[in-house]
Length: 187
Image (tube, rainbow, N blue to C red; front, side, top):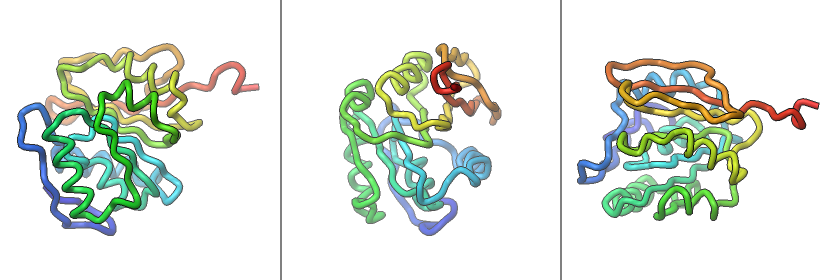
């Protein structure tokens, strides 16, 4: 795998040697980051909640994001993430949680302006994942969440979230979601 654009363009990194990880295809990743171009700068704090290889977090960092938190509980994925972070020399710009996402969200202290939610397709309870992001206080005001899912898995949004846009790439859909302002926040 390789980084498509930015400061680390062309740098190669590893994918986990397991069938439980489904890396985002280069074409989809390139399209996703073309859409996100205006939202990524040195103030952007990224959460890659089901990081796998770390491709989405690394691409965001290469394109100027300030910091990325990566989370994965798969043994092979965690081993690969550690290798990739070291080989890309990103130790000072990343933090890794090698535990299930529910526990990671409880332990994290950062808030995020950009979240990549790309779980294994069999874990398609997006409603629960989005609710936990909000309940644990991980989302900055106006945060954008990019949910990558199969066309076969519908996206059910919990109360307090709105769908901004969706893009379809063969059997993959990327849904762009943001938390709605609560009544208290609007006043």
